[in-house]
Length: 336
Image (cartoon, rainbow, N blue to C red):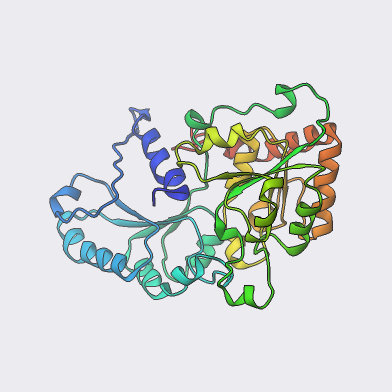
């Protein structure tokens, strides 16, 4: 996967691992490829081979081919890297039709590998029935790409703007697929409830709503009243995200096992951007400062932050203290 989780969990840390030098203990030579090399000699010099985000019957055939033919010769173990719950995905989610039809191959791959790496304890719990050797490696951001934390309240004059910039960035998988049965039943928004969508719609004159990546179809008719940014190249995303110049970030998740298994990468992005966040009370965000599953609370948090710059500073500093040690691959021995 050359998008979010493949970049965050494989490509960036592999780049950094190749620069890591602890001559008494560690020296890494990590490679990243996007096609399967059908030559057992290719793998013999490696300590392990890691497959990331595999999900289909074709992927399972590759796993079995490696295990049956290459692992026997090279003795190099195979690991499976997963950053999401790949089953029990809500039917309204755009990804459900792909993954929910591939649960058989997914579970079989977990059974044939030597071990798994996942990003959260919730994923380890979910996958433990299928694999007995799972290690949790939390997500971190690469400081050499994102830069260090520069709090918004230290970068600009501490005065209230006429229209605070309130933002969200993510994929269409957070919104209800118009082709799904749920949408036809009247369910709207996905992770964005009807009440939150209505709040955005009613406050476009009061706030600058900044949406990056994907936009709920329910807001298509007011795209001229919000600031919408389409997808950018994944390697340009950190600079793009900082250029949005947000005052407040929000990360909303509908309560379900799929969302409870997610990582807190959105917290990391808002924190490195120097801004406070408003979060659903889902498992990845449960320890953050402003969390709730009540829509009125979420709206109240946003309005209070928008109108009180000192409260923004207070919330940001609390959030930063919570995730400071997790924030970057390069800090706190996270890379090792």
